[in-house]
Amino acid sequence: MFRPSSFRYSASLFIVGLSFPTFCLLLSAHAESEIHDPSLECPEIQIESLENKYEIETTPDGFNGQKTILRFLWSKDELGPQISLQAPLFNRSIGDIFKYYREHFGEKMFPTKINIVQTRLAAGLGALYCRSYQTDPANAVTLFLSPTSLEYPNEFTRLVAHELTHHWFFAQSKHAAKWIEEGVAYLSEYLVTGRLSGAPVIQYLYHSSASLTDTDLAAPMRQMGHTQLLFSYLFNNLGNEFLSRLLPSAMDSEQNVTNAIPKENPYHWKAFQDAFRDFQIAKFLNRQDYFANDDLARNRYFLFPTTIQAVAQPTPPLREWSAVEYKTLSALKAAQRPQGLRYEDIAVIDNSGRPIVVDAGAVAQGNGMRYFRIIYELKSPKLN
Image (tube, rainbow, N blue to C red; front, side, top):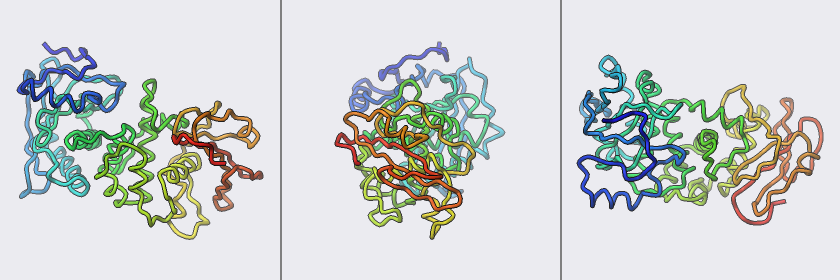
């Protein structure tokens, strides 16, 4: 009998109806990344043994479009989700996700069956995508959602948009870098719902030197907040062209992100490193430059309206692809220099009565100056 508290971290989860040779072939390609977050564990559930089922037929492309079956499943040990009264809301949610999917991934990639397994997940976790449960990835997807996620349509929409993006990576056999896959998944939920996922963003702003690329098993939430803010920033400043250029690539390195940046862009970014530098400044400043000549320049160092600011860390960052602010120029110069990593020290004039000015080299001093060290992954001598 299934016990919701029974978990195991393994790629060899039992799947009813999948032949052993097919199952082994499926795992051989993806065993190293059974789950997109290595700090989590997949539940051990025999899907076809779940006693309780409820199906909703949705028409995500309108009345005359294709049908997608939402199939809710749960164990007799679980309370039944309140889904019958919310059927119209679920139909609208799937429609919103489908419109985004069609624009960016192609409607042929949208599943005709979405299995929603209600089960208790790790604390604070709303949904989970496990690759070894996907027996027919071209047509169907199986997602695990916590009971509370089914109570709120907006939360349901956000989570399903996110997890369906992970499924697209799997169905397309994309061996993407974890930070890029998470970034695209968070961008999906942002573009479908118009909202950032608050908890990861807040965690990141309070740990603002968290690495973008190094796996952080101790606190993965802040790393997810980092990549979420980055990809929403890139999209907001580069538009659909950025995403349309990124998705066909392997997405396994920052070079793919560099190639996705349009050559003609308003900020003259030539590489991902240039965009990352501006993003880090925006993270700490997060304000519009009202003295700029146009809207694009005005928003260059702006992320989203909030009173929350990134917290300056008391110790210098030693992680790859990270940044930290120093209160004074002397503190920056006295900070330990990262060994074997490329980095850049900069000074920024951040005075609401003056335009934002970035001075590479951090040599300027005066009122309204703020000082930063930005660390890059590239293993070459420092920039300045």
